[in-house]
Every structure is written in C-alpha cells, then in structure tokens.
Length: 547
Image 1 (cartoon, one colour):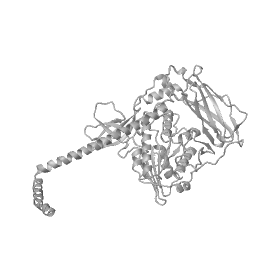
Image 2: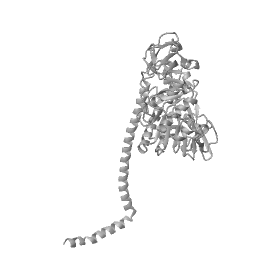
Image 3: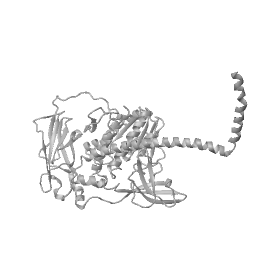
Image 4: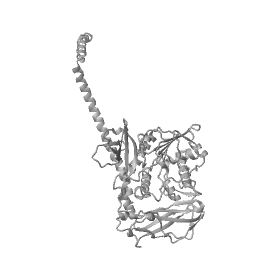
C-alpha cells in the first residue's frame, strides 16, 4: 500500500520540477533568488567585518597603551625645570667630583663610587637633579675601559658606580653632557612638533613629475595622499599633486626646516663649549689590585634571549668583554667565512648596518657586490646585495623605511617598514636578520620611535611562530659626533631611544648588541665607529648569529 501511495506522487513532483525549471529561465525569478542569497551573504560579510573592526579597535588600544606606558616611564626621568637665566644652569667647572667610598685598597670585583655635587655658574649648590652625565673608567695602557652607572638623588648629588674588572691604574672621566635645564628644553623641543626635518616627495608618471611636501603631519588645506599601514597604525602624508595619482610617488628626500623650539637663552646651553665638559676631580688615578677574592665563575657563550645588564661589558686589550657571557672575537676573513658559509644575512636599518656589508665587500672581501660598481658611501641610501657563490653566502642591506634623513632624492618605491620586511621572510636555521634604527628618528617625537620598535617586536614574534630557529639580532644605535646639531640629532635623543629599545626587547629570543654602551666605554664619538669599537660590535653580532 505504501508503495502505491509513493508512486502516485511521482507525476506531481515532476510537474513541480518542470514548472520551477521553466520559471528559472525568467530573469525576474533568478533576480529574486539572487537577492535572497546576496542579502544573506552581505549580512555575513557585514557581521564578519564588524567582528574584525572590533578586534582592530582592541589591538589598537593595546598597542597605544603599551606606547604610552613606555613613554611615561621614560618621561618620569626628565626634569621639568624652566631656565630662568644661563647663570642658574648647572656648571661643570663649578661642580665637584670626589670618591664616595674611600678605601685603602680597591680590588677586582668591587665597586668604585664617585660622588658628583653640582653647582651653577653663580657657584650656588643645585637642589634638583636631571643632569645628563656621561662617565667612564679607563686604563689607556691596557686598552681597558667601562662606562659608569649614574644614580640621581634628585637633589643635585649623583653617585657614579664603576665596577672594577681589571688590575692596574685607572682614571675616571665624568662629563656634564647637558645640564638639567637643557634636558628639559630638549624634551620640550622634541615634542613640540612632528619633526624638525621635513620631506619632499617626487611624483612621476606619463612624462610628468611634481615635487610635493611630505611628512608625518602637514599643515595644509590641499588634498593629501595618505600612506597608511593599518596593521601597524603607521602613516605619513604628502600633498597630492594636481594631475598625478598618489601611487606615483617615486622618490623622497629630507629637507632641513631650520626650525627651533628653543629660546635664545636655552640655545646657549648647547654651544659646543658647553657640551660634554669634564667635571673637576679632587683625586688622582686609582690603583686596582687583584685581591683573589672575587667570583670568577665560568660564563656561558653569548646566545639569543640573554638579558643584558647596565653596563653590559667592558673593553680589555681593546676587545669587548660582555659581563654576562663569552663573546667570540671575529676579525679575520676566515672567522667570518666560518660563521656565514651557507647563510643568508639580512641587514635592515641605517648606514651603521651598511657599514657591515661594506666591511664584507671592501675590507675582508668575503663577498662581492651585485650591480653596485661604487665604493665607500656612494649612494648610501641604495639597497645593496653581496654574494659569495662558492661559499653560498648571501648578504643584503635595506633601509628601515620612512623616515630617512637623506638630503638628495633616493628611489622610494621599494621602501618598506622593518616589520613588513620581516613579514616577507620565511626564516629558518640558515637565516640571520640584524636590525637597527635610531639615528633617523632623533628628529621626531619619541612616541613614533616606540611605536616602530613595538611593531618590529610584533613582526619578530610572528616570524618565530613560523620559524623559531631564525637568528634575530637587535643592534642599538651608536653615539654621534660632539659637533652634531644637539636639538635635531644630539645624543640625548639617542639615549632616550636606547632606553626605549631596551624596554621593548625584554623577554624575547633575540641577541641584543649594546653598541651604545660600547661607544660610551670606548669614548667613540662618531656615528660610524672605527677600529676596535666596530670590530667588537661585529663580533658581538655574529657571536649571537652563529651560536
């Protein structure tokens, strides 16, 4: 009976199917169903987009919160004083230095403490801190030196702590780099605008070109091109040329705006004769003895992920000795070949890393440039590639992306932020990535530098998820020449960035090359350090890379 009943429905089903098929050829019927399905699809897309946007807002707030946290931590170290008159600022020559922990004998492994009491030009005792002091202890005949750690009591008195690492006669240097009044003025100046350097972008297309103003912020009513990286929340802008698209931005250069946010009285603080002045001492050199009572426990070989203290090391016999690990000294062609054979080395940063590839190609000659017929610093902004086909060595150098202080036009279309360059690498056990940034950020508010550093860290974390055996090394910036324009690119700006970089890269499996501490210890006041300082920076880098 059930069989007969189901059979009677067959003609009815066929009839309905025939009518539906006939109706489908009517476009109105198709449109009706398309509308239904499209509405459902759009509803899902809108819901998905909204969820992404909610996530994005959360990510944004987390990133900005971290930026503010690091910025506020550094800002607490900055004095908030107003310069009333030059004579009431700290005077190095009127200040005094003496030994705070006088002893009959100083032994290796102990600490020497020097007290600094600061006075103004009227010979009145300073009652607040915030002076920028640079100190080192050294024995020139031994090629030995170490930086001092400054303790600020915020009342005009400082203690400089020098660890004693070697036996012999040691001399002390304590310089007032900038007075607290100058530090307060520099901090205010740095954050009074979005940069004391401007930029010009060249747009080129269809045999037309136009040069327009660019920067992190433009005071204009004209239409602008926004170059936004939404994931990293990074953006810069250019005034849009009238007849060319935003995508035709081809070249970029920096321009000096010759702007200053210092008063005339404040500017006096940064005249060369008032920068890095030695504080008089009431003592001569100190004799350090090996009393055989210090801890000489074996140190591990330097490896990624290790925490770097302050000071992080010292020079002895003109070779850097990290205090927390053993560094391999790299100097000869054979040293570097043994490390880099079969490796891909990516240098991402500024000219202080370009110095690496120059050393490989023009000094020890373990690789040859590809499509670069020049030498030394010619066209220093260019991307460089060097190869050694026999030893399977690949070395590339690329800029860290906008901003770059080059006062000649350079090709800009290939520019990518460091984080984006990291994202493009697959990584692996034979991949080494060395990163630096700093010199080209000193002209801009510290927030921008912190954001860039955090975005680099996030990109490294993504890299480690897909290739945990990739070697990544972070090199701090170097100190600069004493004659460098203080308000724009002076070392105090570099110091605050150094503090930020140390904060950002805590607790991640990277090698941390403390080039800043090496530069202070060796008194190398040049952005491209020569000789022993550079050799030690290289050695520390490739000890991490070839661990």
